[in-house]
Each structure stands twice: as structure tokens, then as C-alpha cells.
Length: 318
View (cartoon, rainbow, N blue to C red):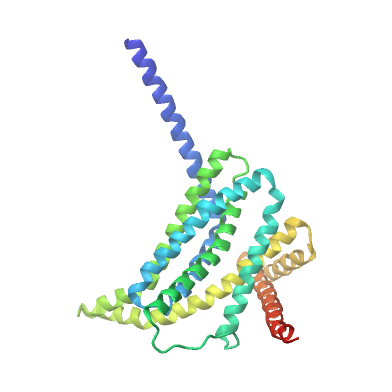
């Protein structure tokens, strides 16, 4: 009896050691994957605040929560299973699919830039929106944010998956799940903190303490400018990430490889000319060129869509 109990305890201890080793493997793989995708995570955090700007303060956190749930649903229910299946069955299809997503990001960046310049399409203003109008506006905003997040999340998980080639399928799935949870919590936690900083400033300003009141007034006055800057950075980030996805896709598919080679060559030349700042300058030059490419592609897509819309009434009149 005692020997049987000892054998059972020994088996339990062995299972516990195996589980601990598996958890360590998943944690290490997830940390490595998240580090590789850090650039796109930053872009995601820069893009999101512009979606909740212009809404009533009491609606900001509920809207961010809705977007965060949509983001997590994108990652866990659609992207992660789809990428694991494609990586196992059709690995060559990943790059073209990501390029389609990158083209959408380029289009959205160009469209938002034109809107900021007063050249985009604007619907008529309604002076007193009804509750139904506000609900429809919120739903449309959340849907747009979740669509954009789908592309950014796809890029994050694709980069993460590329670092997990040498691990088992179970470890890949667990690592991608950990990355999805960590990235979603980090991005939308940061966004929630950011958009409520003006409320924190108002509370500090109301304390009456000279130091707290001064800091609060600085926050209240500075947050609109910061959110406006982040809106611009979000547009730039979409063009940069979209252009980068296109360049990487061209390299992966072997189509028009002269274009990514030209971008890499120009960025490398800029870095070499910078001396001690070579690494930073090369990265900045590459990001800028990717952004310009993304913006040019986005403007081309906007032009094509505008032409199609213009032709529809003419075709209907004949």
C-alpha cells in the first residue's frame, strides 16, 4: 500500500515537473514573440486613441472595452486558429493575405489624411443627434476600430508565429494565446489610461494643493494637443505598417523584389552616412520610406475607388 502511494506521488511529481517545463517553454516563446512584434504593438497603441476622440467622456471607457473585446475575439477566434491552420497546410498563403491587410491599412491611412486636409468625403452635420444616432455612431466607430485592429493583430500574430517555428503545435497555440492576451491588455490598458488623463487632471486641479493643481492644469491643457498628435501619429503608423507589410510580402513572394531592395539600400545608405547614429537613422529612414510607399499605395486605392464611384452614376444614366 505504501509503495503504491509513493509510486503515485512520484508520478504526480513527474507530471508537475513536465507541466512546469511546458509553462516555461510557453512563457519564453511568448516573450520572444512579443518582443519581435513590439513595433506593431506600439503602432496599435498609437492608432486606437483617435477612434474614441470626440465622444462624451463617460462613453470613452465603455467604447475602449468594446474595442478590446473585439480585438481579443479577432485574435483568439479567427486569427490564431487560421494562422496555425495555414502554417500547417498552406504556409505560402500567409504573405499574400497579409499584403491584402496591409493594402487596407494604406487605404485607411490615405483616407484619414485626406479627411484631415479637408479633401475627404464628409456627411452632413446633424446639430442635435438623437440617442439612436449616437448609438449608430458608436457602433460604426467600434466596427471601424475592430476592422483596423484585425489587420494590426494579424501582423502581430504573424510576426509572433515566425519566431515559433521550432516548437510543437501545442506550444505555438499556447504562446500565441499568451501573446494575444498580453498585447490586448497592454494596448487597451494604455489607451484607457491615456484618454482618461484629462479626468485625472481635473481631479488634481480640484485638490487645491499648489503642486497638484499645477500638474492637473497642465494635464487638462495638454491632453487635447497630445490626443491630436496621437491621431496624426496613428495615421502615420497605419501607412508605415501597411507599407512595411507590402514590402515584406514582396520579398516573401519574390514579386517586384527590386522595390524592397531599393528601400533597404536607401535606408542602409542613410545609416552609414550618420556615423554613430547609424542604427537609429537606418531604422527611421526605413520607416519613413515604408510610410511613403504605404501612403502612395493608399492614395492610388482611394483614386481608383473614387473613379469607380464617379462612373456608377454615369453608367446608371445610360
